[in-house]
Image (cartoon, rainbow, N blue to C red):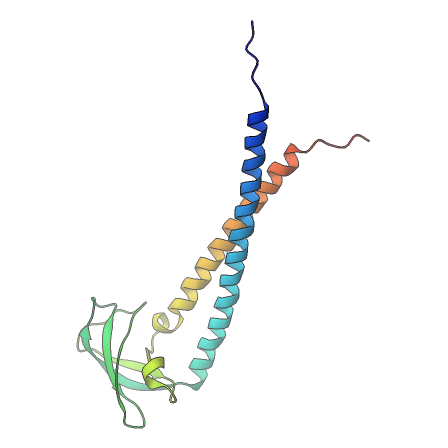
Length: 157
């Protein structure tokens, strides 16, 4: 005697899976879109910083956590002595001379090494993360919609 298997739990599981794919796709796509919009705004801010900032020489006075986190000292064009911790996409040795870029109206809070990584590293990292979230979201949506379409009964003509 053949065993009869109830198909209803399997159908509910497939429907729940489809709904989860679509929900995850929506969340990831929205988060990725927000990250990309924020990244574009941050890139505009960085471009404005590059346009209005001043470059002066500075020197590494100590390494806080290896060569990627130096403490840098410099003197502003107005003669103010400033020390700040630099983090991110940089690599320097203790005692090295570096160029420092800062906004004249806020040298303590705006100072960065004048290198591509220190200036654009965060923009590129956030943009990459936003793109990954967005593309994963689109992939989840695509899979969920395909599952939804394959589960529908075609209309008789």
